[in-house]
Length: 241
Image (cartoon, rainbow, N blue to C red):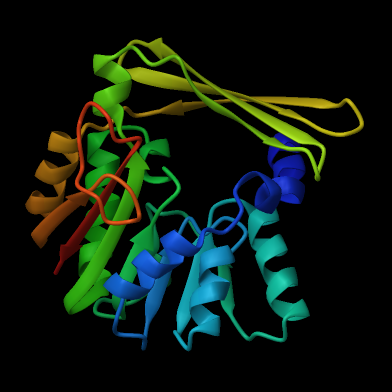
């Protein structure tokens, strides 16, 4: 928990909001009346969509992230509903047909334990969506990680904030260990390991279709370029209920 407490302090310095990502969300979540941001982190895109006259609710499992999101929204005089919630229990927090759009980005989905849990979460999202509502999912391209035995992602450095974020992969049975080190300006190091499910593009599409989604499209970046199994860093999936 200490790691996430520290990470929440620097989250925006490590993962600054991206205008290309925001534009993608705006283009694919055109009905502004009710949007759900699943695993919203510090709430950057929840806030930015709200500033674009969207009605957005942000949920995240980490209390420190939700606290940071609430504090920022309050400073900006924005009335946003941020909640601590597990992506496996969305149906306990919301009603069917509540949302015109749902997005879950930042490689959050693969923190779940297995394919069955991912199905449960995505099926809940399906049920929460209104007819014709869009779902946007973004995870790392695990086809590339597995096929090319990728060991690490580029280290993130922010000299102005005085931080360095090291990201490494380690295979363990049918999981991937995501080992990270956060180095701060005062020479502190915070290490963390998260076990991730290496969900391939074919498995993701199979679950999506099993849930009942249609009009499935894959992208390789938020700029809308085509997905390539061997080259794309993320998988971005857009589909419709």
